[in-house]
Length: 407
Ligand SMILES: Cc1ncc(COP(=O)(O)O)c(C=O)c1O
Image (cartoon, rainbow, N blue to C red):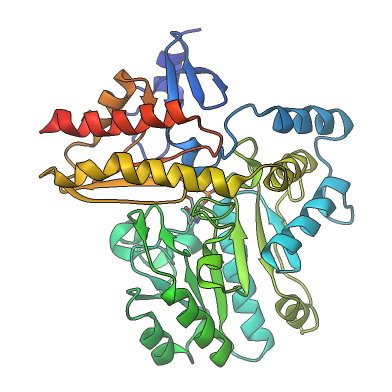
């Protein structure tokens, strides 16, 4: 089979025209931090498959969980039935997030949709008929319509879909407190990406805005939603981005690395107050139920991944990664084409002054044995916590060389 020509004919890739303008690389296999292409080329993975493969690919514990659970029961419906991996997962997430009511869903965007629906219903149950949110400039919360409504309007797809996208209120980080004060009567809640804003620009922030949002949401009985889909599970050096500010939100969304890059699964975790208020109201139920909700196979994988956090010193690993990113990327600051260099946890970012270099940077890194996918002006890497010292050196030197090549 000529996979690439069939791909070109029939396969519509993300954020792309069809057929795509770039020919994708055909991956034959993955192993630990390596992506093996069909022609045998080995690439060190500097992307963690969009923040997901935190322990590297094909980790023995993850593979074992898949094999064991696939033989017992890959799936069974969640309405009226429950299953052990799902129950175990809700127990673990309740403990980890400090939010005891857990709704399982099937992708990050769906978890955010469920979070928004939950917040609106909570306010309605308390006789506050509001459906708007305060969100942040440069935010990204997913691609479905409700999620698009809380993504930065200038940075996303609002202009394409017009009135179909819910209208919300956007604030800078600096003005967040005042915006909440000004609009508290008209909103159901506030949604933030804690500490790092990902797809909206890989921006790293001080934790102060989290504390302000927490204080004001408590004062006005607004629902504080922390979208930890990207930041969660240790990416910023703490288990949750919220931990940097010492706060617990009213709703947390998790996804991506929940299953360490092996399956699609997400969750919305919330307080007993919110789940009780909705459940004891005239609405009685949260009207949402994905077909694959509580999928035992995905839940078994998530359980295996979460268990690894107590089996390895992940914080030391992530701290070490951060140190190497800081040291090795810092010299790039002296380059004229570089606007900023920043890193936190397992995330290293180089912001360029122009977006014209993106495809050249990617090409150069691939030629040097590293898989990286810049977007716009950002050359960034998110690595597995199990990356070796040599692999990370290879990633950072490919990033540096790719930039030096452009000068
Ligand atoms: C902060 C955040 N929220 C939500 C999403 C959407 O997740 P998914 O792509 O799994 O729908 C993403 C994806 O990048 C994200 O970074």
